[in-house]
Length: 66
Image (tube, rainbow, N blue to C red):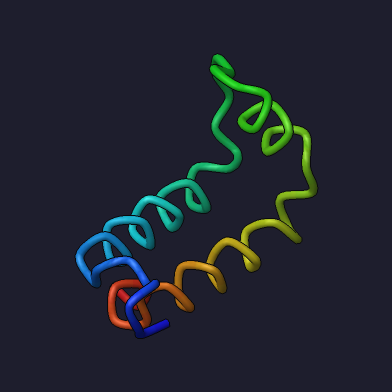
């Protein structure tokens, strides 16, 4: 993910942390503020969590391990 078209590392790190936070809170009940959140809430969390973690690791390997 390096090159002129890739986002800066700081942005990738922050995004990876946000994805990991989302993966950790998949089972939390609450208000859905978007169709994306509603779809996530209705998905198979056992399959979704590893995918979110893999995406976070691809964006920022160091951050994803924290």
